[in-house]
Length: 167
Image 1 (cartoon, rainbow, N blue to C red):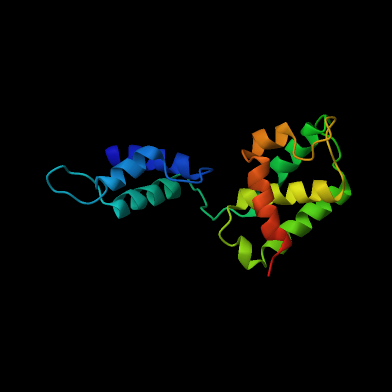
Image 2 (image 1 turned 60 degrees about the vertical axis):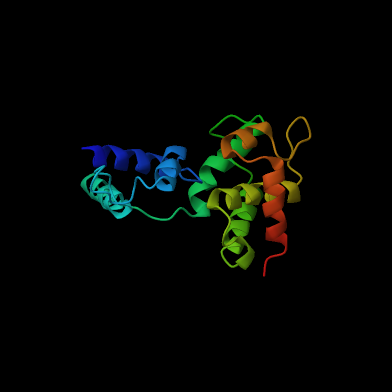
């Protein structure tokens, strides 16, 4: 029972989180996930096995997140930040340029270690910058985009530089 609770908790955190949940880091650092006969704690692979079992029972198909998984959400945030109401036909040039930049990121060694959501957010920023799309306050990276992507302009610019100097 406790194993299933912990496994469900971990699955919920793994969907969008970039780091391990703080409580899990504490458990690992003090060794609670190692097998211990006295405390009856679980081994790490036991928890992972339970996660896979829960996923199979619920018929989930696990896969690694890729930048395209964030495309619709970030495009929607880009349009809302400009004051448009959804459904609003997005700028076709903007969509094409974002898709191109995301495709380009797949070939870049510099972007291999970058989180897929940051790659997509940077592609949105670079496309808006290239097409000179700004909000009513003349900002390329809107507050709406910052909120929905959870990235600041500084994060985006660092990744944007990696885009520009891809190998």
